[in-house]
Image (cartoon, rainbow, N blue to C red; front, side):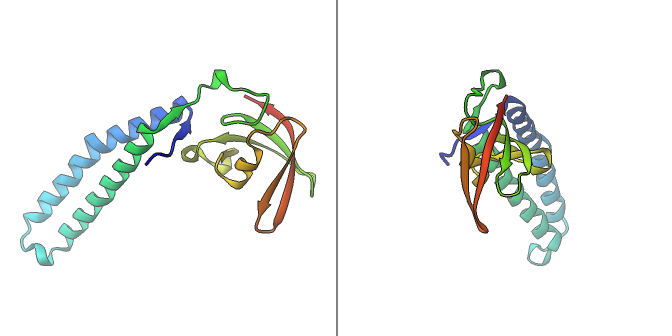
Length: 157
């Protein structure tokens, strides 16, 4: 896993905290559930045991995924964001040239994307299309419905 994960310090800290919780609280609980199920007899017909083993496997997969994200994280400091062009952690106000609707998004790493809060991933089609654009430039973005054109109106930190 060589993909870099760009994220804010806040998001990185949340990932580390979640990982610690999984390792120190959830992992022992999963082991305990397996041990309790094992005590109930024949493992061939023990659905509780099978369920506990499956839950443990899912937990271990999630731990591995988080470890990969934490180890490949690159923290972007919000005070050092270049607002001369669209880049990660910048807030960009764009206007859809087809319907004249204006919207503001913050470009974030994949793990922080949350459209309801106006945060889109830099790897999303719109995010990719906006990256590197200067104020006033037009971004042409390929969508299933055709090419969308957005004008970059403002870039802030």
